Length: 476
Image (tube, rainbow, N blue to C red):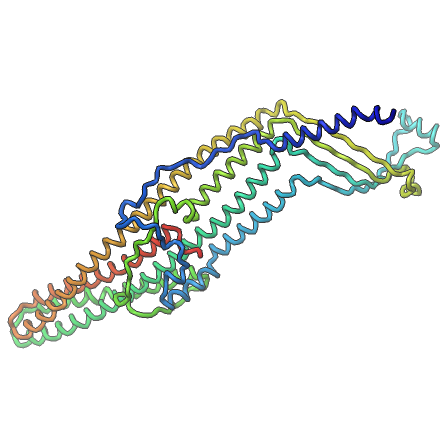
């Protein structure tokens, strides 16, 4: 007979449990997949259709100069932006750990003592005096409380998914910061070598014009040239002299910037070799545009942003549906301290369960859901834009790599020709077969061409670095 009486309750409990399992397995909001982008098979400026890419090369394999490697070692460990990115990863990881506990009941322990003395003229006061013979009542309570929300519509599951995507985003953000730092350090180092070369050119040109000025003054004393010749050569000498402190100041500023990138106080930077003597291979292994979706950290971050937006839409929509909450409380309760821990008389227990359907919250829940949908639409647009920017940056870098090589070849030939012209003009000037104007023109052209050649060499090096960054290299 007892079994028959309990059968409806068991069936009800079984049906409720089955309903919870079915509801928990569904998602009230449909996720939007990544948009399919019509990416080209190759980059616009690629010379060949090669799937190989320098993105997979560790920065130690790409930058082989010992002094630059030492600088990068310091920057990848001590750079403050990277340190902040690591702390962001730790924060996102802590948030993810907390989100994974969303399905675990909340448990709290409560202990309290209350005393109540009603007015002697009140009904409670008169009742206490007549029936209990006291003017106040005490209550001693020690209980554990448990509350649990059933994840019927995937609210908790979506919050966990959002926290997981945020954690993965923080990791990709750290990679993006490192690629940027590595590129900035390498480009700053090459710029420092450029300034060294420009300073050497300026000093060499100053020495040359100083020698020309001394000879011109001798000719002026001998009456072979006018004072105008001396003044013109002096002006050329001062032009070369003015470049020296300019380049020296540039070296100081660049050294300070590199020191800060390396996470240390401003100071000198050790470097080896000469910029023009560096062997620069033509790097053109950029892979294919489709590979950027997995290689570039900022593109991966934009992709994960869509995962976060899908999760946000899921839990904001779930907030519109009923919430099933179960609470329970049990412990010790007594009206006298002497009976507080009297077991089992002081034991009590309470369990409740209920569904709560939001009806009118000043449209707050509906607005949050609509805003989450709009944010997801923005995320899709931002993802498309990030992919387009990434493809464009790689294409630009590939074009710069190939074109600077051609420009440098032309500039090298021009420097060689102008150096010969400067030597010939000096010899002819000393023999009286050339005027001082020809000498000044040859020296000025040689100075500008050598400075231009150094700038083109730096541009070629920077183009290689930019290509390495654009395809997603530098964080390994």
